[in-house]
Image (cartoon, rainbow over all chains, first blue to last red):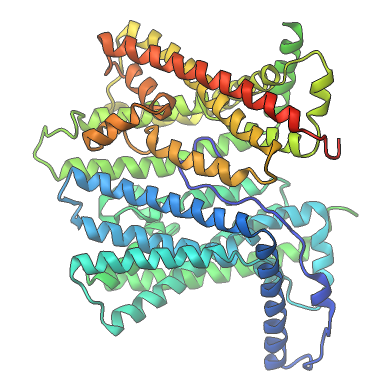
Length: 301
Length: 268
């Protein structure tokens, strides 16, 4: 994934083995049918997936640490871009230097949490379908979308999210802002909504792999757009702003939580639009997923 | 020579398979670029009219990013380093040790073929982007500058390739080179002038960077093409760039010899 994308690079899949043994064990001990039983079962499956991911990361320890270093470098790169811009201006479209740094931090935080849970899994769907392993997953006694979306946890993402929090804390300190409990809660809600939007949209794009063999390019194309999220929203005008606010809400996903946390001006309408888009994206992505799985007729047989 | 022509033609055919991928990549890459340009525009907008940033007008800044996009399409290493590392890991290089073909020459030919394909696909979206920006860029009209810029771009391509090639050869020693490649790439990305022209940095950082090969991987050819570098600075820069290409070549040869001595053809 290099070439013209001015984005930070992304780790390549190293060990695609899913702990199938774990999944087959005790398929239905907590009683099928009931919602709570299903939830408990899925949670125990997810715990197994976590154990798997930890084991995998720990068997390549130096590699795990090097990836964290790579992420740190790219985070530093984004921060230095913001720093360079503010070498030449006191404010950009009404944003001050430390507000800009807070924005880059928040953007990195959201991106890393998203990456920890979903990114690798979303990009792998097309590979699962191409190799026929998806058929096997359809047979497992768990929700297929759950399994496809959460198979691997990228633990480094949490470490990097921690470094982003550190930068955000420092930026708030430099601004002399101490967010209230309400502001932090609002930030948390918006972060969850933002991750949900990213997940819904990227998963929606990855379902294209049911029809096209090389769908990974599209998924990475979406990932490319994350770069827009760390730019101050007020710098944008016209069609670009409308599209990336109300269609692909890249200009809301980090800007809005940053504004809430820093006590900057927030239009109530943006809350409505963003949370509405989060719900809409989730509904559409689930509908398309169901439609695709119903139409699916295996790649290998 | 005939051998390499064959390799070139195979390289073209292999990369043509990815033409749609390339098109998407080139087109998608322009969206964040458009965003960056709008942020610069906002930055200039907050200043008194006619105020410069490190001697650049907004039009020149915009032009810089456009030229970077073009130079990047022409010279960026795409999958070459991954492929080289994989060939070493899987023992595929064994065949090149017995065949009458030079591995560096072989990979360089494939790199050129990849660039030809990529550029011919990317030219469409990039040209559209350029037309869209036509009122906010200043096109260089200085013919000698363009010619020497072309020369500099060629050396940039060689430098990019040779450095990536050498990094990929580390696969002779370590199993997982991708992290190392990404770490170098991060430095290249900022220090070569991809993210912003280096003259917007504080003077002493720019001065330090000029001692490294990084500016010759982007900033130097881009500013030559823009006609920003002239006279002794131009000739000195070209000489330095050539010296870096030569150094990188010798380094690549040396690492290859050491690597082959260690090589045990696992799985080959």
